[in-house]
Each structure stands twice: as C-alpha cells, then as structure tokens.
Length: 79
Image (cartoon, rainbow, N blue to C red):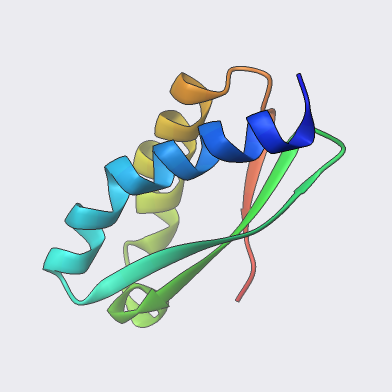
C-alpha cells in the first residue's frame, strides 16, 4: 500500500471520529504517519484540556484508525 492510500484510510477514520469530538468543542488533526505503522495526531480545542482525552485516544481514536487501517500499530497524540 502506498503512503497516499494509507493516509486516505487514516483520514477516513478521523472523519468518522471528528463529529463526536466537535460536539464537545474539540477536533483532531493528522500530523504524520511514520514508517507506515505509527500515526501521530493532535487533539485540538476542548480535547486538549479534557481529563478523559487519553481514554478517548485509546478507546475511540486508535480503535477506529486500526479498523480502517489494520497495519497501524500505534497512535500517538502530540500535544
């Protein structure tokens, strides 16, 4: 799979998650995909200061990205 194809898959996953984050005043951006295995994202808006953002990252964001792109091994939030 090309990097472009992988990026499209990850962006599709983020598009699935984004409405839930925006409901609470937050958002999410894709920063990079490193080595085709690690996704670096940035939580934005109210998601930055939210006390449950690590839980959101693990349970919601990472799970959804891996559903769309099973080759992804980890998702890291860059603050």
